[in-house]
Image (tube, rainbow, N blue to C red; front, side):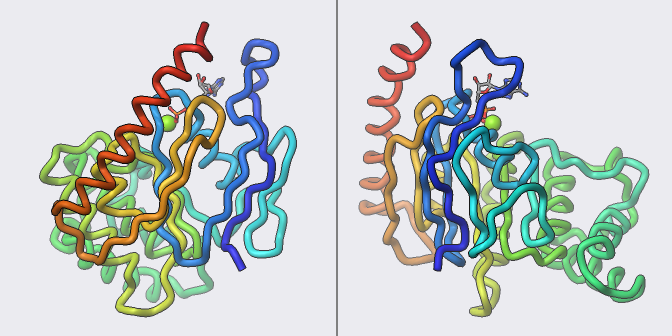
Length: 258
Ligand code: ADP
Ligand code: MG
């Protein structure tokens, strides 16, 4: 059974010009435990798709199922992480996590604090547990945001260009970290939907890549490479294939915008 099933989903923002859809008849199956990357140029609807999956926007038409349940709002089995971290500025790193854990899981205050400490250690932030967001770099804030999302222990993680604002080195570290946590010591993997416009990032992370052109899914590709992945010849072949999709898509985007 797929973890997420999107059937003929269309969506328009209320203030968009008449007839302009942000999503137009999108259908997609995401398997349980799959790492899916959504790629595509800016403005093609990646964030909108994620927001609908998160239940923050309601479909205009079509349906989204999580397991067998049609979703009609946010749910405790799904968690979204935005590019801009969205930490509470008045809470320390540890408090940001323990607060979210207590809202998401039935645990005591002490248990939530222990879980927070555990996940801060996993993202190498244990020594910074008592810092406030204004005292952290972008990479540190994103570590906390990821630790928070994973600590909430939802089955589905929705990540919208989470590493987009980071320098290359920090991005590489956080990619490794996210993969390690997703692999989950051989236990049940989470289903991840990860939006990026970075092709290399998609080949590095994904089992399954969907390529979007404005409002539509243009193509899908499964990446059958062993992990941990290295940038060898087969890696480059996948990159080339995704790059050529981007080139084809550019033309379509120009026609769409005419
Ligand atoms: P992406 O994440 O791929 O860059 P988005 O999903 O953000 O794309 O945007 C898809 C389309 O919807 C774009 O044309 C964008 O301008 C429009 N859009 C996005 N957010 C809003 C909004 N809040 N109100 C109106 N239009 C929006
Ligand atoms: Mg976006």
